Every structure is written in C-alpha cells, then in structure tokens.
Amino acid sequence: MHLSTGNYNPTTARVYTDLGLFTANAEVGEDASALFNLLTGYAEGYRWKKLVVAPLGLRERIIALIEREERNAREGRAARIVVKMNALVEPSVIDALYRASQAGVPIELVIRGICCLRPGLPGISETIRVTSIVDKFLEHSRIFYFENAGNPEVFLASADWMPRNFWRRIETVFPIEDPKLKARIVADILPRVLGDTAKARELLSDGTYRRCAPGAGETPLRSQVALQHLAREAARDSGEVRPPFVPIVRRPRGVEPAGTPT
Image 1 (cartoon, rainbow, N blue to C red):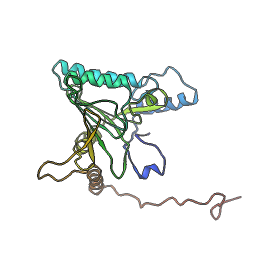
Image 2 (cartoon, rainbow, N blue to C red):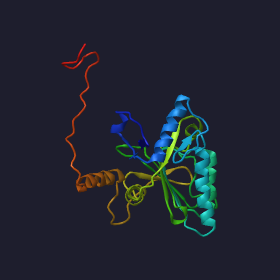
Image 3 (cartoon, rainbow, N blue to C red):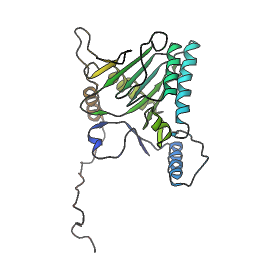
Image 4 (cartoon, rainbow, N blue to C red):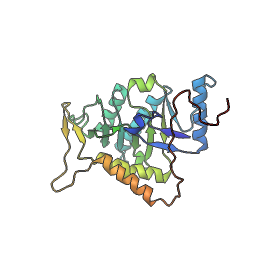
C-alpha cells in the first residue's frame, strides 16, 4: 500500500510538499481493502485496525487524542502536541486544544492557511504557538504528534481539521509505527519545520502575523531548503543500486506505437 498526505495529481506533485508511506503491514492492508469496499458499497460495520477514517469517527478520535494529552498534563506525565496542516477551523477541536493548553500542554501548530484558534490568550491559550510557512513549494503535509506520556504517537493524514474534512469527505489518518520512520519525522522533519526563521510567520493573539527572525548571530533556517538537503544526503548515503530512470513519454491521443496490433 501507499498512503499519503497528498494525491496522484501530476501537476500539484511538482509544487506541493507531501509525505507518503509505503507499507506491507497486513492490518493496514486489510483496512485499505475495507475502505475501497466501503466506497464501492460492499462493506459496512467494519472495525478499523490501523486507519482512522472520515466521516466515520475521525473528529472524535482527534479530540480523544488531545484529551489524553490534557489528562497526562494534569497528572504530571509528559504531554505535548505538535500539528502541521493546512487549516484549523473545527470549533470542537479548537475548544479541546484550549482545554489542553489550560492544563499546561505545550502545543505547537504549523498552520499554513486559515487558523480560527487564537494563541497566547491569558488563561485560555498561553501554551499554544501558531506559525505559518509560505515558501517556494506549497506546504501540504499533515503531521500529528502526541507525546503520550513519553511514548510518542505520530500520524500522517490527508485531512485538515475542518468541518468539510470531518464530515463531507472521505479522509484517512494513518500511524507511523516503524521506529526509523518515526524518528525521521520526530528528529529530522519536525525540528526543521518548527525552527524555520526564514519563511515562517507567527500568529499573534490579535490575529496579526509577525515574521519570524533568527536570533543575533544565527543563520536563518529555511525549512524547505533544509529538508531538500536532508533528502539528498539520505539518497547519497544509501548503498542501494537503483535502475536508471526511464521517463514516461506521453503519446498524442489516437497515436499507437509502432508494432501495435490492430
């Protein structure tokens, strides 16, 4: 299976940033098969093993994960939420984030577009920081990180936290469970995104944005460039022998290649 935060559009694939997962996990495969059966009308009442699917309980699962961090913070356990996505609009999820903030949960939101949550309000959202990154490529990946009392859970998703994604679309959220892949997201990707001081802007409590800047003597960090360098280094360090790339040549419609039987 291939699960992704984006789609197979050949145009947007050149200008969007996305994350994808190739997996042969049996439970993910069963869920994927059930999802396609559901779309074609051949399944009902399926209990998902790995995937979280909208409109079948995605909003409720997100709120439950946020509330778990809230409980952990109130009980003195490690708690933290990091979310990267395109938009944050759903009021019930925003209320859950406010409650988690009031419990002391550090919350870092990277929301490229519209954000209806107001960070930094005294007594309401003091522990919440919201930034937006607008750069050469359209930020499109959705990453959800929950500290889970020191046993972090990481999810990738096709869905933003908006009413249309929770109730009017088929969306999927899937866990990243392989330790190496999880570490790549937690240790390599998220720190660069959160540390951007070249193209990031911070949302203030009054609804205005302030451009982030590096500290005195620091070199600006441009997260998209840093992640490109990281990907190139990973490709160079890999010892795999790759076959030569053969481009797909598009033929005009109606023109058959030589030797095609008629």
